[in-house]
Image 1 (cartoon, rainbow, N blue to C red):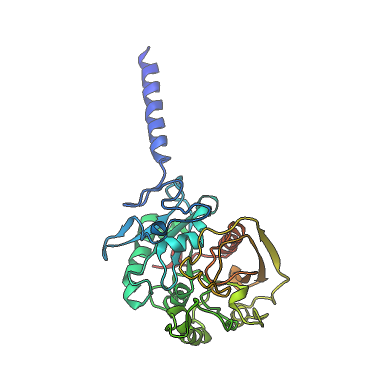
Image 2: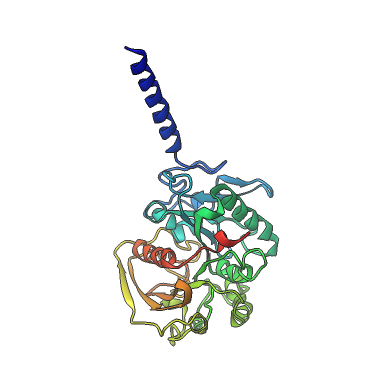
Length: 347
C-alpha cells in the first residue's frame, strides 16, 4: 500500500468515525431511553404495583422522581414537542402515562413527555418548584431552540392545576397549549352529571375530585391573560343532559370561527387503565371498565396565529376510563398541528 493510499484510508476512517459519532442518538442525563417504554401497561389487567410507580428519573434538586419518555432515536438538535402531563387527585404518574398513553406516539410525532408525581397524590403550590425544575432540566438538555411547542396536559385535578400554573410567572410566557382531560373547560364548562364522583355511601365524605369542582369552575371563569391553544376532552357520561356547549368564549378570544361539524373517531381497542377501586358499586359517570368506543371531535377553525381550539366528547365514557388509541392519536395530531415557539423566544 502506498503512502498516498494509506493517507486516504486514514482520512476516510477519521471522517467515518466523526460521522458515526455525530449520528449517536441524544440521551437525557440520568434518563436513558427504553423501547418499549418502561413500565408500560399490557392491553388489559395492568398490575396495581405498576400503575402506582412514581418513575425512574430523579429530579436532582427536590430528589423526587418522575417519568421521562422520548424517542430513542432522537437526534441532537432535532425539533420536538415537549409535554408536561399531570395526573388527577388520588392518582399516580404511571397511571396517568397509561390513561393518556401518548408515549405510544412519541416516535411518530417526536414527543418528549415528562410525567411527574405528587407525593400526597393531590397537586398544590408546594409542588411548583419540582414541576419548574423538571421543565428547566428538559429545556436545558434539549436547548430551547429545539422545542417547537410546549404543552400542559392534565387529567381532572391535574387539569385544574394546569389552569392555575399557566397563569404563573414561570409558565405564562412558555406554554403554547393546554389539553384538559376532564379538567375544566376554558370558554364555558358543561354541567356535571348529578351522579358525578366516585361511588360512595351517604356517610362517605366527598372526594377532592367532586368537592373541588366549585372552586375550579370559579377559576375558569376568569380567563388567563396570555393566549395559547386549548383542547378540552371529556366523557359524555360526566356531563349533564345539556352536554357540551356549542360556543366558546376562549375561541372567540382567539378569533376562531364557529365550530364545525364533528369528526367521529371509532376505536375498536380499549384503553389500558381504569379506576379499579371504584367498581363496586359502579358509577357510569365516574367510569366503568375499559372498552372500545367512539368520540366526536369539534374544531373551532381559523384561530389567530395558528392556534387550535377544540372540544372532544367520548361517547359512553365517564371520568376514569383510559383513552383508546385512535382518540389518543387524534388529540396528539391536534396538539402538534398548533403553532408553538414560545420557549424559543423566552430569554
